[in-house]
Image (tube, rainbow, N blue to C red; front, side, top):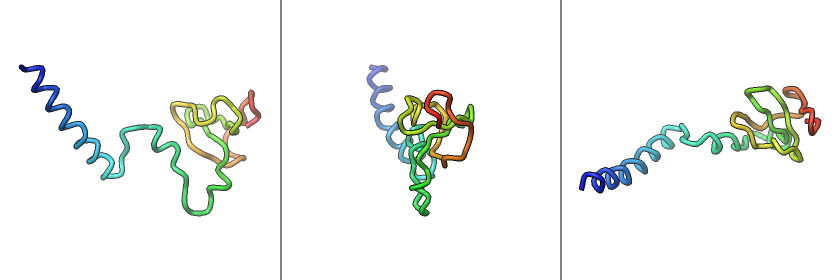
Length: 87
């Protein structure tokens, strides 16, 4: 009986908590923030992926493009070019 109550409470509390976090402008998922495209006309310039932990830039053909734990879209002149793809 205790297990059922805990499961039921978690099923109710978790969606409410997630909604509150998103409403405040925070995000529970790293990936959902990483892929946000700006709306101020820079979207065409942001065609590379910058690994913010290593400051390495990857192009769209690279296996690490949008595939790092910490990163964001960037311009072609930001960071250090990847040794594999040339960034």
